[in-house]
Amino acid sequence: MESEEFKLYPEEEPLKMRRLSPDHPDFLENVEEQKSREARHLFGLDDLNIISQFEETMSHYPEGELTEQYGHFIDETLKHSMQELVILSTDKENQFASVGFETFFYESLDNSELAEQLKKIFSDEFIDAENGEIFITAQEILPRFMEIPLPLYRKMLERHVECYSESEKELQEKLPEWELAFADRLNEQVNKWNLALTKEEIFKRLEKVEVMAGDYLTYSDFTEADGDYHPASCTAVVPTGEIYMIKESGQSRDDYREYVYTHEMLHAVSGLTVMGGENSEGELAETQIRRHGLHAEGRFKWLNEAFTEFLALKLLGKEDSNSYKDERRELQLMIDKGVPEELFAAAYFENLEPGKTPRLKDLIKAVNQKCGIRYLQNLDKEFS
Image (cartoon, rainbow, N blue to C red; front, side, top):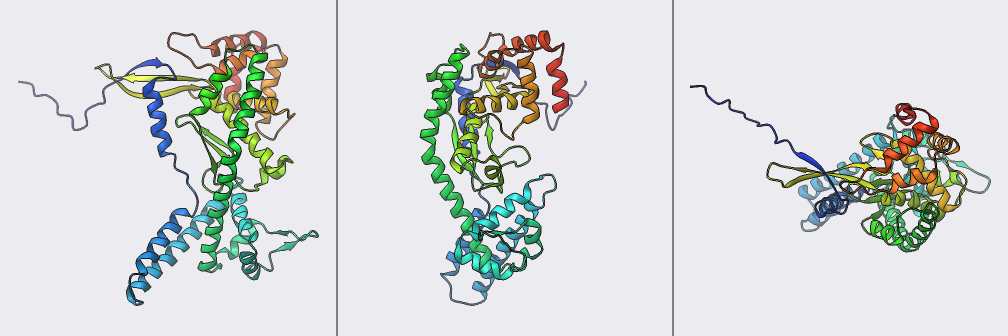
């Protein structure tokens, strides 16, 4: 008698995929679960909490070997944090990593008490401008960074957390005003394009979004953009601090943050194609986002960002920005060759319901007719 093969790790049951409405309860439940995991990751906060716990424990014991041991733990925690910051600042894959490090340093220079202590350590590296401002680069800071006394470094961490908290509070106070302005501007534009996206639907999509300030040391990806949006959790990140991009833009801090907010909220209200995987019993085992805006299953990410930035500038009445210049140039060429803006917009905002033909197909067909066969696909290879 032939024995059955024993499988220590049986193969997973294949799932039958079907399209779901983006408003399907199971998908919305998964979004909320993902959102609960998107904790604010603030550099230094965990270390400061650990130190506080050590100090709380130490307060219950008289001075002696045990308190010395806890004091050693505190010192090691701060040293490890300093080393981690140096690693972050020298990340060769991120051409702007040093900017975050410099901004961390400048936060402390903004505090007179900390500034005086830092000037004593870095006196030779500081450059005083005619207007009294102090300049120092990451390359000048790094060689002597580990010379900073641990108590002073701890105060720098506390200053960083303080600056973030202030920025987060300011952001949350601004959001209601920005949201109303965003919805009005977008509603006016989609009406010009005769799209079916109503103002009520815009607010409905915005309701799901959580907007938070991003710590430039741990959250923002400086190699791509200073804002971010996560469709799986409906979480948007808007930058903190007087970082270099604000200065480059020539805008005020609030204007720049609203500009980033506008870009990220366009991602938030752009359409979705959602798939659900059913098991053999017909139960939904998982949900997946297959298309977000114009970004479809790994394709056309560049086009999605190009149209998002194109529309953000249009809504805010701005002529240009430093973001996605090459991608926007290709988008404008297609529009100039006769592909209507509203075709891009219709595909971008479409929430694809079951049984419907995606408007993205109409867009690809129009681009093929006006620009040549596989025009988008060939550009996709260039930008990948």
